[in-house]
Length: 420
Ligand code: HOZ
Image 1: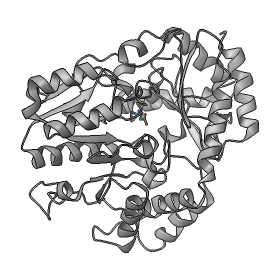
Image 2 (image 1 turned 90 degrees about the vertical axis):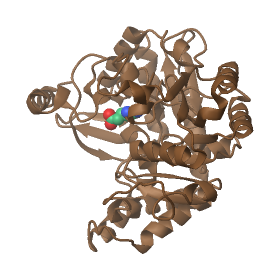
Image 3 (image 1 turned 30 degrees about the vertical axis):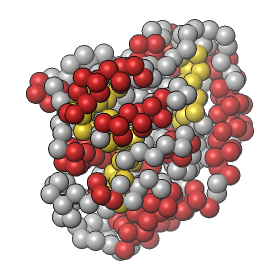
Image 4 (image 1 turned 180 degrees about the vertical axis):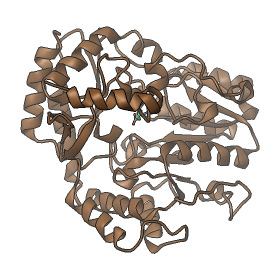
């Protein structure tokens, strides 16, 4: 495959955009080679500027549950475009989207729309601190909650991919408000609460981690988080930016039957357009300004294009619950391609092949994967027309647009690429 035009565009971008990209992981640094510049997407496929076609398992890092350019989403955006692109004033559709979110995620009694997952998690921990009057936040090693200063401690995603131990520019005082614990280790949570229980405002967790690769919770782990936070008067925040509307219509909290106090959602509720949301208990969310004293704002929040696209996405998913069974079946078939010696983690339509012969349950076990071998696998898959996330420490995502033929071709490619 030729990548001449992508290579030229990357060289040009590097002159004026840091690292040539607007978000680090997509620079391909950990897998070698240059990033592809994308010309367009259609259904489950993307096309680069050199005319190469790929089956896409990035799906804009999760939200494209219906694939690229789904007709109902395009139609909704076109209708919104005809009316106006931004008002900075309330619209009826914002309330409709809020109602659709509440309908799908029963733990969310009130919700505030923002513009990204990062804004959602930043705002959720602020309201948790305002509500409890406490400062400390517990997070888990290898979990990533956007680039919020205090949540970059021991973070997954690009921070893990690039091996950045301590992000410069984050004051030590901010990091001191974060307690980072191993994921899936109940005793670490118990210990932290025994030592700091009266100072902990919230525990924030990816209920199924996507940002160290896909790592599911061990049986009983989320229940333990629910019980411990409640016992100490701290809030439980589920970061469902990746899992929301993906691992079930009502997210991981529906799949695992846990009711968090607060939930953060991301791009999926914008049908792939920039949006996020945080919501949860009415008594907690009532503290958000102007209803209460916790300030949070945004001119583009509730942007009409993003809201229209998100509403179309949520309405489609609600009308087609069979999508989730299909995604489950496609995921099982695709992941069956892994040979012995590869650990496959999958929850519904998100999955990761770890180049490790041992179970991957936390950041320590994830980072023991052979990342050089992952890089060879990634490049071999790309050569065979399959586009995966360019990092061992990211999840792959299926969409309803993936066909049986896509899966068959991907499995055939993977069988060869595993030996690369
Ligand atoms: N941090 C994102 C995935 N976990 C990657 C974002 C991007 O490069 O677009």
